[in-house]
Image (cartoon, rainbow, N blue to C red; front, side, top):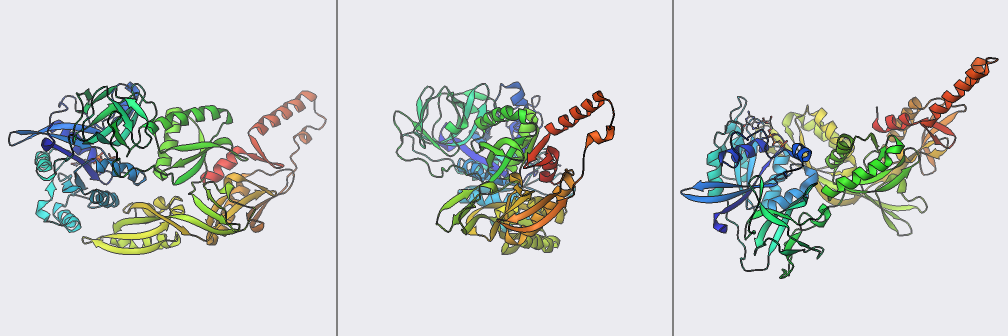
Amino acid sequence: TDPARIRNFCIIAHIDHGKSTLADRMLQITGVVSDRDMRAQYLDRMDIERERGITIKSQAVRMPWQVAGDTFALNMIDTPGHVDFTYEVSRSLAACEGAILLVDAAQGIEAQTLANLYLALENDLEIIPVLNKIDLPAADPDKYARELAQLIGGDPDDVLRVSGKTGMGVEELLDRVVERIPAPVGVKDAPARAMIFDSVYDSYRGVVTYVRMVDGQLNPRERIQMMSTRATHDILEIGVSSPEPSPSKGLGVGEVGYLITGVKDVRQSKVGDTVTSAAKPATQALPGYTDPLPMVFSGIYPIDGSDYPDLREALDKLKLSDAALQYEPETSVALGFGFRCGFLGLLHLEIITERLRREFDLDLITTAPSVPYQVTTEDKKTVTVTNPSEYPTGAKIAEVLEPIVNASILAPKDYVGAIMELCQQRRGTMKSMDYLGEDRVELKYTLPLGEIVFDFFDQLKSKTQGYASLDYEPAGEAPGDLVKVDILLQGETVDAFSAIVHKDKAYAYGTMMATRLRELIPRQQFEVPIQAAIGARIIARENIRAMRKDVLAKCYGGDITRKRKLLEKQKEGKKRMKMVGRVEVPQEAFIAALSGD
Ligand code: GTP
């Protein structure tokens, strides 16, 4: 295709503002999906596909569209919507020349609208502002058109009004895509350079790599090279999705399509990397490639220890489709054998644990999420601590650096007080406060990431009756007055409960855990002290009083078979007990203490 007849775009929106519905309508209106085959959320069908194992989730769809007698190829590129995946979003945006900024006409601008808009502007994309859901009785397009125009500049009358549901305005939107979004530019005769914007594992075909061609051409059967690793592979299939994958004679300047090389692991075909030709390689990779770093860590343990091999197998499988997932074996006194896992953020953690539970049918316990701390001791050694139990104990601590984020919170103005109070409690520093339109406010804060991973979002939602939205991005590290709090049972540290917290919150954490455990751990034959400590200093203490639990006392003089039965029963019970020193703790107690039930 002549690059002048190509338009590459994406739709950016806050969650639930109707991106998938609009994408569906575009597929239908351009005729790539017949009305008969149209089902809700055509593009969003990963589950069904996995079950059938035959088609591939379309990360990009090519649609024909005619304007004034000329046929254009519109490539719509899908972007993940959440903050955890900012890097993936930024690569998808880098594959486009323009973006449709979609805003719900009954809701207005939300935090992800802004976050995605800023990313799009960083990538120099042409922005087409659009209000969606204008069929809703609650829609107030005039108000939000002003809001949008104020945000990105321009005339409120230029903001298109559509309904993804009824299809109203969608044809005009497609015309505008052709009119406003620049055609791709690249050098036809240069060595091939294609950017990977997504990489998806398919159990039948191996990894399917989605690329945007920048320069040159890639052909069927050609040997390609990944520029970050120099690894080479043969192209087994190259083509475009429309929306079903269909092989083509190659991809040229500005085109968007997929490659299949038979590799089995998405780590061999990484998002952001540049694909070039092995025979005639480019000298310079496309800009922007980085290895995404995990920012949130958690221990994942099977509730039933015999599920450990299944958990390992499940993680090995998930890794094939998720380049950002990291894990290594870990053992815990309290929880047995498990894995220390690293995630991009909280949502990523939730997605993975949910998939482990649902797709692999595993019962799991996860430890409280933790962030990476840089701990420097007085003998000038620095370690990265992703697990509180690895916190250095030998030498004195000179400094602890913690990850910091820039957060943007949007909410109706009535909730500003509640939000400021919450951010204050979480050691936030306010950077700015701006009105967007009449009643909506954007608050910018820097906050320690460690405070956000600890139920910040839930608190924010409950304090604002669900109206606030949040987005954040890493903003380096800052020294923090942090300490490690240990929880001890009869003098023995219970590793799974150690936490790195701010000095001012250590006492509260210690008391909370000690009280919780006192209620959860049954009485033993001896008194059991529960202590919270910072190093050797005890900051809180509870006691579980002793109880003489002699089952045989009850049947003094009774017959021997009854005695034996009772002893058997006691042994059964012990199997589900974990020993911490001399203290027997039912596993349920650990689970309940960790989940805060
Ligand atoms: P995710 O894919 O989950 O990020 O959400 P999304 O932004 O793609 O939103 P989706 O298309 O799933 O739509 C969210 C909800 O809004 C669904 O219940 C849709 O039926 C509804 N919806 C989408 N577009 C319209 C519209 O134009 N009018 C009305 N009335 N409802 C719509």
